[in-house]
Length: 574
Image (cartoon, rainbow, N blue to C red; front, side):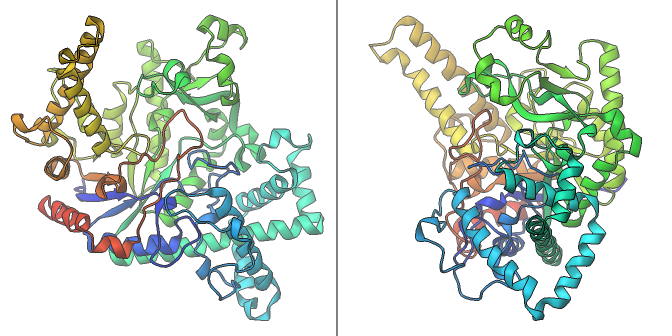
């Protein structure tokens, strides 16, 4: 069996990236190229990205609720690499000032969308009319033919979404999908918009292909992300409804980790994704998944499967997220009464009996073996966090899919933190994901609560019950600090202190020294920027919006980059 290459990586969501020169308010592929060069100089082996598929039209679209399993998001295009784009920067000069993307801290998706759409429409007009682009127009036509049905469906879906003002196809006139296809081919305005959408996807393909070649030349792997599902408001679901079960809404059970959101704390996470009809997908040998993996492989050398537990069984709700408030105050019995007796539960079967667990294991093993057969030569990471059945991780290891190792979640039977040397080499070690605060923020919270509990008795205004509760919480938080301190070989007398350079160095040195083949940190952790990329169970706000407030060129001269390079070199990673 081939030995796994030990690599260190960094999570750099594309929307977060900034360019050396002025960008359009969101990270683009030119910015990513600059950050690839930075990664190579810092000895970083891979850059982890979040999903880059086409986004919906909301004010703050989630990359995990894409409107296509294949189409790419044009907002990430580098405008200065688009044929037909006017040469004067910034693009375009005649856009009203109030629509210019302005923020360097948070992405303003509406402004970015207006700005880039205006610029791309200008370029499209030049591209389709000027004689100098004839050869590229012929290349585009050949590419459209080669891509086939997915591209035709997606471009028609975008035409209809524009015409009806929403991706929510169930709000459109009740027409069969073939009627939409016919209209897009026969109506002159619709046909032009369809060709525009195909051109955008061609641009995405070309820029990503060029970027992949640059990353390969620099020795930096790009790590993609495949969500477990697609949005119900997607081209896939609209045109291939037979593949999906829309009577259930996929999600995750309540775990108590997101108590700040009442619904998530009580009921769990309701993602609003339809379930797969695995029996129907089997009829064409899982062609939908095969295409999804093959298109991923065109861009990425490694990828993460989000919520890989969903291949074994997935928690599902008998209502969509827009009804969550209605169900929040209800009991389980009252909720079931409104859903014809159905309750949130694992589908297609639970894990209650040995027979259930056997069937779920067989299903997950079969589906993932098919995916791995298509993924030959790629590194596959499985996000196996949450309520994990005992049979999952041994199966992932057998399939050579690297599961996650979050140190303070790896507690053994003796209620002690598992040492890094005990990790399975086929693992992905990290302190946090995009759904959690950076470890620096968590550490300071635990430290403050530990100190608060220690000093509770000295606050004369507190009742005995309040003192007891503060001490209880402080003791629990202190235990986490001690766990991590032991993991990082921090002396006992130095484990309970505020976050700083010594703690940061000890923790990430230990993480990279672990036996896991892959280690990763978020940009927020590296650059001491304690913001959260996403808060599960919430929408809008700062979710999916934080930006790195400097370019890759600036980052190269920052002490954090030199610090990371030293950490990586000491752990013999690359």
